[in-house]
Image 1 (cartoon, rainbow, N blue to C red):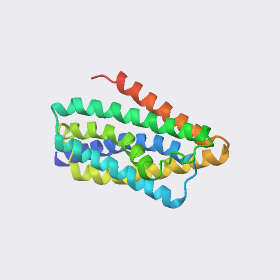
Image 2 (image 1 turned 180 degrees about the vertical axis):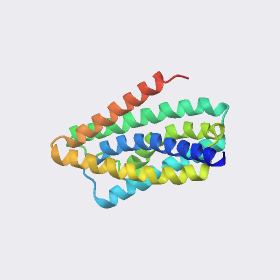
Image 3 (image 1 turned 120 degrees about the horizontal axis):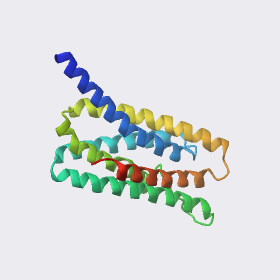
Image 4 (image 1 turned 30 degrees about the vertical axis):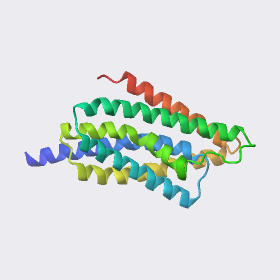
Length: 192
């Protein structure tokens, strides 16, 4: 009986980690099209994993009840930020005269990109106490899976960028905008 319940908890932890990681994978492909240096890839991986963990902890701490509504709002803010990141990348690629292009690998750009993918985790964190998922094993699993998904996405994006070098940053911006729209539509069509 105890082994069965432990297996159920393990499956819940893995399912949440994969669900969170798939958003990270998709965004990492878009960011990776710019073919990042190794230090930038590490910075992005650490930032994405840290933001996911922080939002899970914050959501878990706030708990259920009013948290469900805040989680919904946070998801839509995250989608809007993702679209903004894509738009800024696209605009930066079109205007060669702009001195400073949007950089999703450092400073404000990295913060916006990390927030755009992790705000939906705030909503996931709100739900965790109600579905009996232990926080520490989940956070460990999410940190590992998010980092792995980030590096896989960055590498895949880099290969796309190498193949289609001309307009790669423009394509990355468009990909991120389309992802924001797709995530929003998916969220709107999920049963309550």
